[in-house]
Length: 248
Image 1 (cartoon, rainbow, N blue to C red):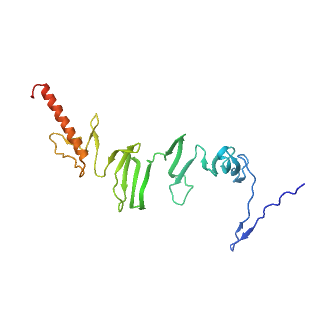
Image 2: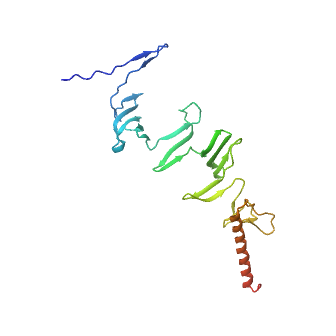
Image 3: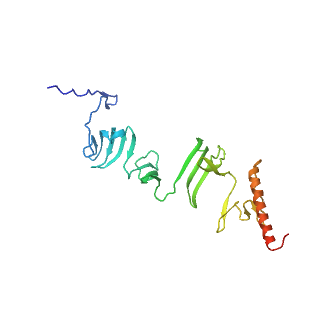
């Protein structure tokens, strides 16, 4: 009958302060959700399962448990998984991770829906183009304000260039918003206008002091569109007068 293999050698070292450190391997048995390999504080523990999952994901991993069959976190070769009611949260106090108040929290509301929420606090998100410090940057801001949801490009107070906000579909540009230009909707039946009730589609309404929008140098497409629109309006008025016998 062969003898069992000898236990692994354990090497200890003691530093000048008397602190003892184990340098050799620490062997623990393979555990289960009920009986973890390592138990902390009586009910909290972790165990290593050489066959976590099946198929491609049948790789060694660590499963962190709380009590009984509750498995809250898995760390394995394929990544990290948490149970459905867990969150990834940041404390609102630097240097204190276990503070009850969270400054930011990512959660799973339901399958295929990632959520950022924190009670009644409005949430926001920033995607940077460039960043040097808190006053030198270019970024996209998405967030909630007291009056609604806000999407905007933003630059730092001391550095960064004002950038266009572009919207598209299937890789093609559909809308482009330039800094310093405004667009708004007026009326019960919304009409696209400049940010002035006296201007409709770049054409000043009668009796107002509004002026045409300035076109960029060489932007003949916009100018042709405006001229075509004005020509259509003139034709509509001419047809109306002709129908009443007021024009030849």
